[in-house]
Amino acid sequence: METISVLLDTNVLIDFENPNDVLSPFCADVLRKARQFVTFYYHPLQIEELKRNKDVDARKKTLSRVGQFNELIDPPLASVAQFDTMGWSNHRVNDYIDNQLLWCIQESVVSFFVTQDKALRSKARSSGLSEKVFSLNEFSEWLDSFFDSPIDSAAIKNCKCHQIDEKDVFFDSLRESYGQEEFDHWWRDKCKAAQRDCWAIVDSYGRLNGLCVYKEECGEVINNEGFIPEGKTLKLCTFKISETALGSKQGEKLLHVAFKYARRNDYHFLYLHVDEAKHSHLVDLITQFGFERMGNHSTSSHDTVYGKYVKPPRVEEKPGKVEYLMRYYPSYLSDLTVNKFITPIQRVFHERLFPDNSDFKNSLLGDDPELYPSESNAIRKAYICRQQCKTIEPGDLLLFYRSSDRKSIDVLGAVVAVYRSSDTDEICNLVKRRTVYSRDEIETMRCRSATGELLVIVFDYLGAIVPPFTLSEMRKSGMAHPQSLQSFDEDLFSIVASRLES
Image 1: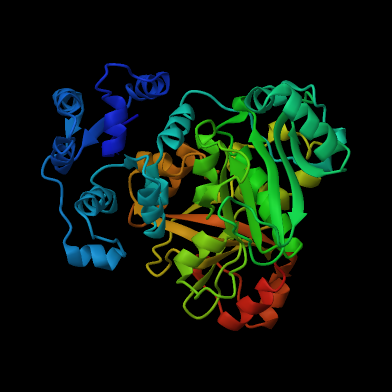
Image 2: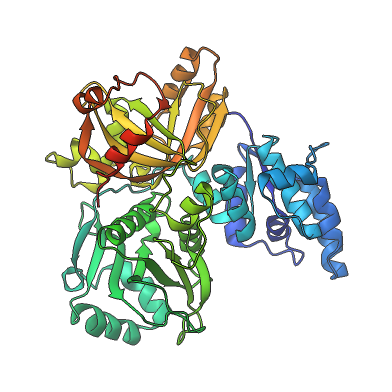
């Protein structure tokens, strides 16, 4: 495997270069896993940033030790005009440095960028760079994928709380966090006795891997600032993935079920409580899909409220297609500012990428969670092809036409990011655990490409087209069997999108 280049943000450099000579077990574990094939870099502008630390002793120690990483030599510097083109704010000195670090990703100077700055990761998402920018937790999970295969699952059951075994070890950490008596009281009186519903991920041995208890609210204050969401509200009372299942995208699968339920039942707003200090993995997950920090829980000092609209509130102006998707997923724009595309996909890749719409799902073993790969659980997926399409961009919509057997359009996705590369290792690293293509399959595709370059489309799964739009219907509308990624007729798209599963 070729060495992977990773740029570290200043906040991560400080974590790794703790001036008190105490490296956290988590940071030590990241460095241990990365040392075989990752080269870490810092930007020369960060030295100036570190020099501004008012703690003289800490400043000296950090600057003396940062040299164990590699300095980027003569990195490209973007102009203010280029910042404006990217939509990057540039009001402070720190903004300027942050933008130059992101510019190294935009210009492919390094493979990835690791930062703990939520605003900076949000800026990366709005620029179509989300798959190249990690938090420390996300980077650690990405590293894990090189060493082991975490538990996989696509099977989630909807049930009542009293049907869940409350003695399962899954609940031990919750009892530890909230106190055994308080948790048992909540589970007994608020969940079981109230006949609350939940979504559960259970493995083939009957063990609980994931759980989300949910309930409907309307017109209730959700935080200590007195905020009342507009419209019907869905509260995710408990959202937890087993520690043994981290990295398997089961959290995304659980979140997808919540989004799907919200769309089907006309909810406007979703929210949950998070102990940020203990569940940073959950914060990283939900902020990818538009959840924002909205103050604290009114009675619990250690819980923060995270919420999002899945339907735009009436008072808010409509943002552009990229921001709209980030903020209101699974809602999406489909007006004339949004390009529509269709691409054929082979049965074997369709089965693995879209398990909820697969033939296997309806088979005898279709409910066995251990038979699904992690990429099938993800909301955010990656599709790779040999096409040289130059017009597809973030915020656009992509229809998948299953060729050979079904001959129908049956899945809709929204484009999050678009990459082009002729480097197999770069592509594999970029879409690891988001695509169904193996390294050999990617290499074969690259060799068959006329230019040696592949198109990587990262997209968010929006849902199935039910019933599928068949080839016969396409022909009646004047459209032939799609042979490659191509534009899709605007009027015909409206017909197909009207069948999106509710």
